[in-house]
Image (cartoon, rainbow, N blue to C red; front, top):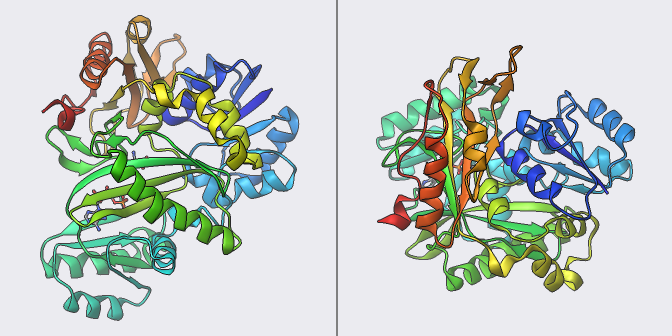
Length: 429
Ligand code: AMP
Ligand code: GLY
């Protein structure tokens, strides 16, 4: 079969890498892809949010399965137009993807279905938002309603800072994305990400992962898209996973199905393990990046049958065999260390030269996933983005996986890059 993957990040490279290993798959196409994905099959330089270009490409390739990696095409309705053309698509509809593209929408649904999350207020009127701040205590969690490239959440201590942030957001800091906001109660606990592959009815729970969102060692500095990850995350034990399933995922999936927006694809449940149990921090409508890299590396079996069934339906009856085919019960502990361009998450210099990627890739159990890379006219690998490489390794246990990932990092020569030196510190301590 032919598979088309939309996106160009480390997440999409990891998906393409895993999918290309399936005996069911003859060809993997990427759009736009990256130099890592280019080695696995043809890449097409189109904007994956452009409905017309994506449809034209799909009609040209006629893939048997289309995987939508990032949130922007989902929010733009790419899955809807492709499904309307008869393609099998792994990725939620535009309506269901609002779980990520509108924080207020997600909070209202959680309230409706009784799903545990932080108390909140949703505002499109500045005066009402400022009045609400008078009635709650800090720390204050202020979120832009729409997609803001990971920068739309601000947490501040004082009421004055909260008022300033609310005013900045609602007067156009992120344009339309922040004209409406959510103000949330602050939750305390350890965070984890849980990924649920679903056809809208059945659900496959992948091992919980933990991301490292802050740019600096010891979880310091500004938030990023994620500087590293590992799985399985011990904070989610069997009991916690059962609670997440019963209190969060099942009510969301059945509620959305009843409300005529069944959720098909992967549901990313960002949770906080609080003293009162798991609570939702956020939903995303896609795999996490770099969480996807650790999940794809750690799964020993074939994920393609499960991706296909999630996009066509019938997961409930085939659940056990799909989990077997994926090798879910023999998941290998896995870790990713992200290498980013100096300056990230701020502005970065483009075009710096990276050496040693193949040296790292050749190490046992190490795989290098590309994100913001390019190849220059001299055929040298260069960095063109913030997050550039995800050095991923598996091992018999997490400490081994983490140390092998760092061996991979050490094999790479890139003076203009940096990485966190403490990925997995919570399991190593
Ligand atoms: P989000 O994009 O909603 O996941 O928020 C980004 C980060 O802000 C999360 O990963 C948390 O670390 C933090 N955060 C978001 N909401 C809350 C909350 N209600 N209480 C405490 N921390 C939060
Ligand atoms: N790693 C966090 C995210 O993908 O949203």
